[in-house]
Image (tube, rainbow, N blue to C red; front, side, top):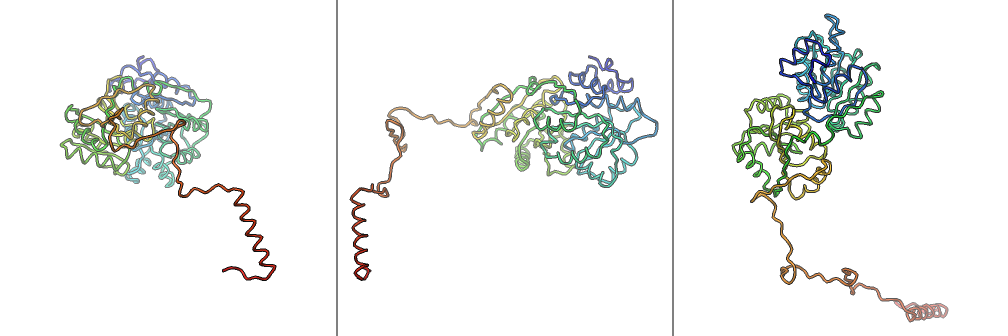
Length: 441
């Protein structure tokens, strides 16, 4: 379906043509008409399917049709979980609004608060923000939400996973009752559906590409590896196969720093982003990677959520994520917009259980390849008389192995004779007491 048939203005259509967009994706074809109806929406779609344009375009269209010259105040609020995603969404808003009189602003932590306040004071129609920084501006009365007509929670599942529910609740209490709510997520988890029950009124449910379906364009491979050889294998795969642009996912910030250091020492220029990095450092790292200056970007799950890196061919999971659904988000960084991609996962012996969880979620087993010199050695037990001498011989009884008892501490069974002896002793003591005989010492 062409964008020209979706009821968008010539100005917006012109901006889309500048970007080379012609055909709408499945989520865009579902979202755009639904948002025009002004119903609340709960939408689930995999990363890389164009869902940002799906909710931004109809909001721009509606605001443009009702725009009053010179009146710039917040009418649409888009909440996102990370600063990278905030900047990315803001860039897309500015691109699509290129020929419109609408203004936008982006608010996120790590940037100068006063600069953002000045931008808000100059006037804006659309605000893209992380929840924490928005509350800071609200506390300083730099922004008012009393005229918000559209509220979008983008990557809503991640917002909940990161523990921002309390902040979202605070923001909701400051919004007008009459507004359109749009929840967008890659996964429709139970916690997300509970949130939707609280803030959405008779929502329209839109699901495009169910869990795992978005990975159809991604070739997935697992390499079993000994724990101490993971870094070596990572460097070998990138170097020997001449991967030009690789996104490496790790679970912890400390591991991210270690992997970045080791790759650079191996001659593979790598940069790193995680929660402890400043906004400036993260921006430069991401820019270097997108421009091809850095060959490898090492990132934690939260820092990389929502990243849009065009034509990224390879994602490597250095380890498996804490939250099994994050595997979908990880491999969704490649194979975007219908293109093919490759997702490699390095798994040591301790991660095999986590791998099974991922496979159950995906509904299929992931192909494994073993590389000589890196795969764990499996020692098979010998059968028959050739058992090694240091193995203890197992002797089981007819009903299984019996527990050997320690006879040295075993109590003797009480008999009638013991009872008679106790009776004679107590009788002798009683007679002695009556006769006034002293007790034996």
